[in-house]
Length: 104
Image (cartoon, rainbow, N blue to C red; front, top):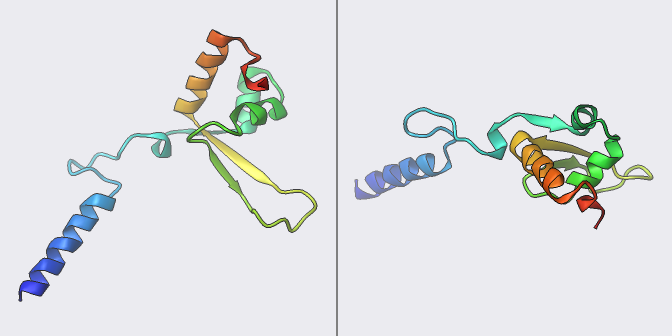
């Protein structure tokens, strides 16, 4: 009986720990739960090339990179999805520090 109760308590703890929903029923906020932009979307918004956007965001934290590490073709294909908060942070940084920041 004690084992069953302990197991139920552990299961409840794990559900709460790994739940996407907060106890109040609100969805958590953060980069994973906000609007994500494609490289083409940001290139169009900012008036720059897609290659420029890729160079700016390729090493930014919280940018989602989707791609196959095994190269079945001659070149690897990677899809970037950039959270709105990351795009805003980088844009402010580029305005503040000058647009050449990403070249370093």
